[in-house]
Amino acid sequence: VQLVESGGGLVQPGGSLRLSCAASGNIFRINTMGWYRQAPGKERELVAVGSSGGSTNYVDSVKGRFTVSRDNAKNTVYMQMNSLKPEDTAVYYCYFNGRTWTGALLEVWGQGTLVTVSS
Image 1: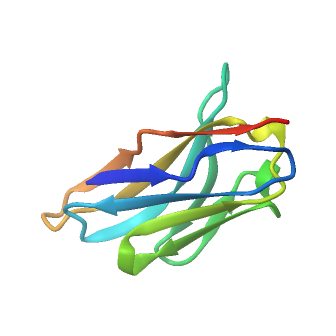
Image 2: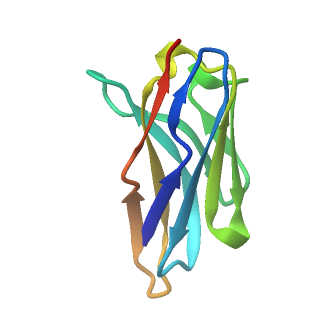
């Protein structure tokens, strides 16, 4: 399974960005797909993930500002980030948890995309 991320960049405080992550390869079922982030000097943290059942989970600091969504037909997850703050600056990593057609359970990480919030 391969993940291709896009959408990072530089944005001013209060601005918006949309991240995309497309999964391809030997995919039978996606259990969970979403986003983590790692800021300089900090540990990687969950930002927003969506499960196959439709439930979502957000870190408290982004609730009301970020929205995660999935296009199951395209095996793609999106994250709309609004009202961005300087503390949102981090490398954002796409996360995939699912099963292949041969039954293997996989966890895969994207290469990361940098989001910088600065004036």
